[in-house]
Length: 312
DNA sequence: ACCCAGGGTCGTC
DNA sequence: GACGACCCTGGG
Image (cartoon, rainbow, N blue to C red):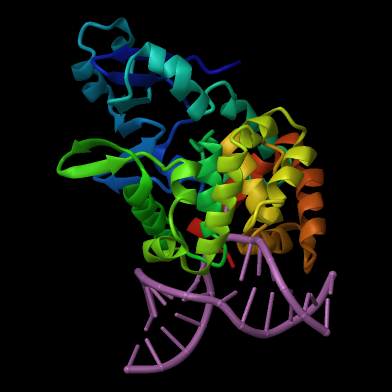
């Protein structure tokens, strides 16, 4: 039984009502996205040309927002995407961005049957969704992630956007910038890139941006490739290894079989399943073997569960 | 104050 | 395949 949910657009806001799997904290605080801030439980997110604020609404709040709407008669979980636009924006962008056509409730049920660890992870992370983010943004963000920590990655991405991205709008005294194009980043000097906090990754970023600026179709082509071919194409870019390529495909294209293996996944896969496997390729193969065609999503639930509970 | 680890990749052996 | 170096920075 698919969960019944309603999407309503009104006054530049989009409401997602009755969706069991939409928890802003679990969507954004798990390392798949870097262009967000949180304040009083509300998430400000920059995606494409949009700057939205995501809030959970109680039944009372929802009724205040949509006073004359029949849906507010029966209390259901509700989320509002403020400033997200009209129904057209939802259909053209948000539906895809939030991976709304995947049935996460069904996925959780399937994962829960696989084993007790995944069952706990899935219960803990209920409300997670994969984001289908801009591929170029994912490439640069995850080149930055190598041997780095999340606060610094976020800072660098923010400074890079301010340095080379188009200003979008000012809200509450803060100017928000769109993520830069490959062309704009390729035009920066390595010195400028280092000043954003990129460190030694500055040269990878510049080189990769240059390659992609010279071949603007490359990323779009990967979307129609098999997982294997797309992964191979991405690994050819400077600063992009096997793990980063998997992150790009998982968080930029919702390629659910991509299974990134980082230090945390090595730890948790060994602790829960493998014992003492050091070979990353074999850990990745074991993940796909255990969790199936959507192993990357299982990986995200496990990753989030392990990190939030400091399982080392 | 100093040290360490952080969603890995690359070059070298 | 297995090491070690690697820009920085926030947190201990």
